[in-house]
Amino acid sequence: AGLSCRRATRVIFCGRAVATSMPAKRTPAPVRNADHVITRLTYDAPPELLEAVLANLPWADLADFRSVCKAWRTAASTEFSWKKHCDELFFLPVPEYHVVVVPWDTGSVPMHAKALYESGKFRAAFCETIADRDRTWLTKDELCALQWSFRFKKSAGMQELDPWWRGDEACLNVFKDDGTCGLVQRESSRDIGVVMPTNQHRWCFAKDVYGESQCLFDLSNETHMPLMKAARSHPTSCWNESFAKSLTHEPGDTHYRDPRDPVEARDALSALFRTRSPRGFSVGSVLKVFPDPAHGSVPGSDNEYLLTYPSQIVWRHEKTFAWVMESCWTVSASFPLAKQADEKAARGDLQDRYLKIGHDVQVVEVENYGSYPDTYGPHARRDEFCETEFVDKTQAKTCVRFFADRHDAECVTVIMPSALAHWVSTRPWNVGLVFSDAIRTCALDETDQIVTQIANERLSDFETRLSKKRKREFVVSKKKKKKNVEVDETGVDPADIELVMTQAGVARAKAVTALKGMRGNVVDAIMFLTI
Image (cartoon, rainbow, N blue to C red; front, top):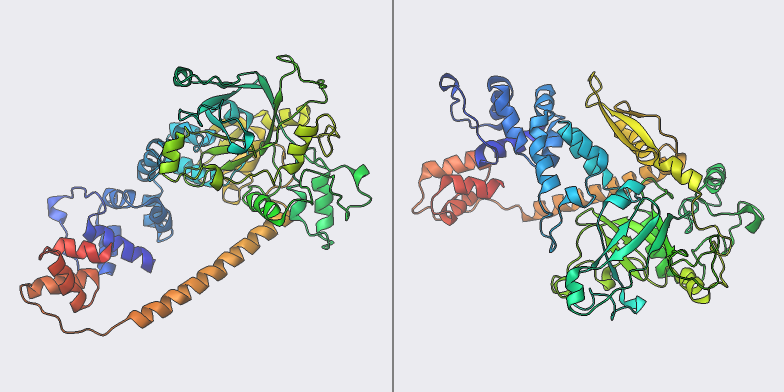
C-alpha cells in the first residue's frame, strides 16, 4: 500500500492522469503529504475521479493497485478502467518493432478474449490476452484463420525461387480446414520474374515426436514413474513399448531427438520446450507438412507411408507475441515478414542467424527426407501423425462460461475448441471463474504433480534472483548516498525550492539543480524528479 501511495502521489502531481471536473464547493486545497492525497482521493473525492486517475495508469500498476483497499479494488476493476488498455493492446501496432503488427489481426489476441471484449468484459479480455502469451500450441481454427507469411531459409537452397530472397515480399501460406495447404504468390513477385512452386500439400498435427513430455521426468525418481507411464500412454506419444524393455530404458529410436545431436542442439530444443504451457506436449505444438499424392506423383509413396518434410515447431514471437512456425528449412509467421533488405537493416530477429531451429536439431528428419523411403524413427514406424479421432476430440467445439467475479450472476458464454477450453479452465487464477466440460487433451497440464513442482522451482529461483538483485541495489544506493552540499541558489526562488522539495521528496541540492535545469519551471522540475 505504501508503494501504491507513492505512485498515486506521482499521478496527482505529475499530470499522468486525466483530471475530471469536481464541484466548485468541493475544490480541494493544495495537498502536501502523500497520505493526505490518498485519503482525500479515496474518501472525499467522488468515485468518478478515482476511476479516472486509475484508468490512466499503466496496466501493471492498475492491477497492483487493486490490492490497496476495497475502494481502490472497486475503482480499478471497472470495465471503464480497462477499456483503454484493451484498445491500446489490441488495435495499436506493436511499439518499437520494424514491422507493423496489429495484435488483433495476428493471433496475439485469442478467440475467447475477442469474445469477452465484444461482450464488454474488458478486464477479463485483457487478462486472458496476457495469460495466453504463454501458450505455444495452435488450434485448428487459429491455424486456418491466420494469414501466414512464408519464406525458405538459406539452408533449403531455394533462393532462386523464393521472392523473399529476391528482394520482394514473402509468399502467403494458406491452411484450410480440409487438411490442404499451399503457397500463394503475390502479384509483385511475378513482375520480377520469380515463380514459386504452388503445388498443393497436406498438413497434419504431429505426435510428440521430440519426447517433450518424457524429458520432464527424472528417470531416477520413483515418484515420477507413474506420471511418465501416463504420459507415454497418452495418444500423442510416439513412445512404443516394443522399442524399450522397461520404462527406465529409452532407446535413441523412440523419437526424433537423436542422441548423436551435439549438446548445443539438445539445449536449443530443451530451451524451447521449457517455454511450453502446459509443460509437456500438446496437440498443435508441432505440424507436419507433406506433398499431396492426389496432386503430383510422389515416388514410392502411398496414403499410409508419405514423404514428409522436417516438422514445423510452433512458438511465440518474443516481441509481438504473434505465432511463428519454424523448421530447419522454412519459417512462417502470422504477421507480415519484412523484406530481406529491411529485415537486415533493422537487424530483425527473424533473420536466419537468430532463429531457433537449425539443421542440427532436425538431423534425423533431414536424413529421412534424403534417404526416403529408407527411413527410421517415427516415420519408419508410421507414427508421426496424431490419430484423426483424437484430433477431432481436441478440436471439438465446447461451451465455456466466464464469470467476471465470484459473486457475479451473469456470465459470458464462449464457444472454443476443447483443447483451448481445457487449458483456460485449468489455469490457477481461473478456478471458480471459468467453467467448461472440456476433456483433458494434453499429456500434462497444470494439475499434474510434475508441472506444479517445476512451477514452484521456477518461482523459488525467481524469488532468489529478485532478493539478490534488491540486495545489490540497496548496497549500490547506500554507497551513492551523499550528504547535502552547498549549491548556488542564485536566480531561484526559495519558495519554489521548498515546494519542489516537499512534492518530490528530495534534498535541497537536487531541487535547486532541477529548477535551474528547467529554467525555474516548478511543474517540470517536479515531473523530472518523480517520473
